[in-house]
Length: 486
Image 1 (cartoon, rainbow, N blue to C red):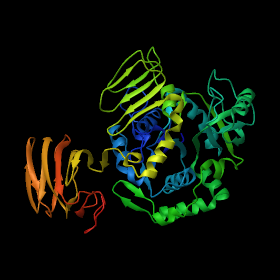
Image 2: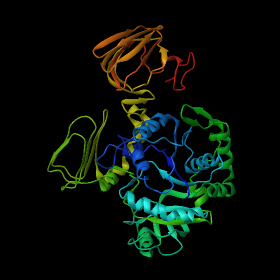
Image 3: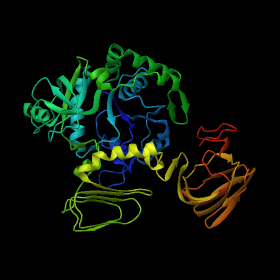
Image 4: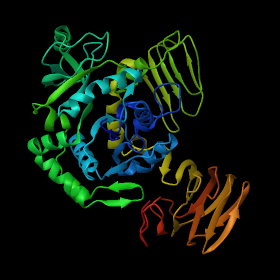
């Protein structure tokens, strides 16, 4: 039985799903599909359960998201084979190359199942059956890509033409068919012609191949990618449970997709039709289309009530959202933004994010809740020379030993019990108790318990920026005496 290693690509910012998806916390880390609490990343891993030969996954993510990825895997009981950290995005060819090099480093040669972390697949059983149908061809050296059986002449996807007509959807999954060509996003008339031939599928960006097979083709067709990735791995560094690729070497890698680097040029490519309720969740309207709707065509998430609303996507993360006599709207409420858009304009949200970025608006990139390796914090309110935050520290986690040049802090614990160290002296601070951190004091907070510590922090001083932190010790690899980084 061939070993199968999932390679889950966690890059991308999903700006068309703003204001929920932002650079600091993109769509793959949100629970967007289905009624449960699992995120898109977690669903990507969980739908693989039951595939023969399945091994722990390799995950590739931006270094800023490493603790989010690790925590979400921990929540579903998965210990990854590795979490590889990209210092910057370089598209899918380098990501695949790094995964293949890492998977073969110990002398193994597994099958690699390359998946995006932000796709929705409603029929997991059909997906698993299709993967199984492609394993023999991949084991024999073919580079298999999964082509989505089209449901409409979409113009937003690239297409793959098979060398022969594809099998109808009834019955067992078809065996992989040689690829004739890849086609960029067509106009509608061309897309309609594609569908009439029975040879075209949508390009999903999911792949199945032996590690040695894709490395061989990368070496032949894009040797500069392999060279840069090999150097980045040879000079990598271990950071807790993460493998951090060497920045300078990886920066020299070409920014190129695996489709362009290999699949469009190789003679070993094959397409396997997939019919499993797939969506890349590229917009709020796409999410509305794939989600379960009520009798009036509405998708409701969070604290939502409505009367005479039709064909709407209504989502609340915090406050109550009320829809009254509205149709074809997307309404998304977050802690700092309320989006109201017609569903037909949902694709235009990326342009709004671009405008906000030009203005330097913080809402373009980050939520009010900021995630840290030890937990998270929310900005509650602020004024001149003061601000209030809600801080959550995970069980067993600890803030760095640090001090501030410009601010003092009051901590009020409202849930759990914390150990607070001030200038070398420790004290236990329980619920409804508080402590004061004077300006310049070396301090640290640790959660020794089994439930999260929640506390209110009141800061006051001449400067309250997050860069006013001097670290002395840090278990998360952020320590440099005298450094002012968060």
